[in-house]
Amino acid sequence: MEPELEVLKAELIALRAVVAEDRAQRLVHVREKYKNVNQLFQAAISDARSLQDGYESLLRELSLSSIITFIGDINNPVGTKLGFSFMEAIEAAVQKAFLEPLLKEEDGEVKKQRLTDILDKVLKNPLATALLRTNPVSGIISKVVDIASGFVATTLTGTKPKEMFVATREVINKERIANFVNQVEKYEELYTDMYNANIKLERSNDYIKLSMEEELGFSKDAYEKFLTLLSISRDTPFKDLSNLFSKSDELNFSDLEAFLDNQKIQQALKFVRNMEDARIRLTALRGKFTVSIKEFKEDYLIILNKPLEGNWADVDEKQLRNTIEQLQKMSK
Image: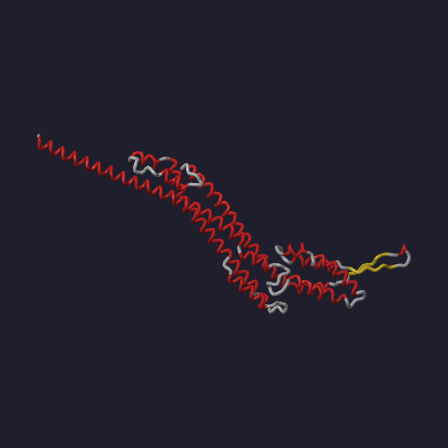
């Protein structure tokens, strides 16, 4: 029996060694997992801050884009970045189509001054100029046409009070109005094209901005829940996390496993997994912004080249080419 007993003892010792080795390996594995979770949480804190900075940075870019500011200058009706001033072009067309012909008529100087005074309420009005920065120029052109169409001369007839009445007649005929419209048509088309391009960019940016604000709000809320789950302070997250994971060497296998299986730890790990999805969404939104600006530039450069291609006589080509070159060099 002794040999058999010795064999059994040897097998038992070997089995104990296997069990001990297995326990040791499992302990090493769970401690490694414990360490990895700690590292994941540390990275999540850094990534959450970086992600929020990324959201806020893009929101600032959407609001303070140098291209948007530059386009505002181009659309300024009294500016000259297009190689001409829209308001000066309108005034020149008014002068040629309406005012100069009036001087050839009876009381022409009086009529000219009266029409000038009426038109100045539109052409010299700061409010109208400011409105024009964001609206198609067809509005102000239509206003000038309405004023010209309704401009009449009045004559008092009769010598006795009962016989007197006021006779009116149109001063500016359809041909003159058509002449004015023909002169300003190219400006109306140019500014309307720019306006439509502006609206397209604005709508695209509004969508991106709304999406960014939603993502930023979601990110902040998720990060707060993450900190709350782990009882970590916003002011000292790394220190608090270090304290939470400082007992690796003191805990046995069961304690470590229980810690990692804790519901709060598992929920916090879901936040970590969602971080990558959030970063992908941020990258996608930034990509949309880049494409939006690129397409806008392409559209706008085509529009700005129209006066050059059409050989507009009143355009300072050097100034317009400089504006085009500036826009080409802008990235955002």
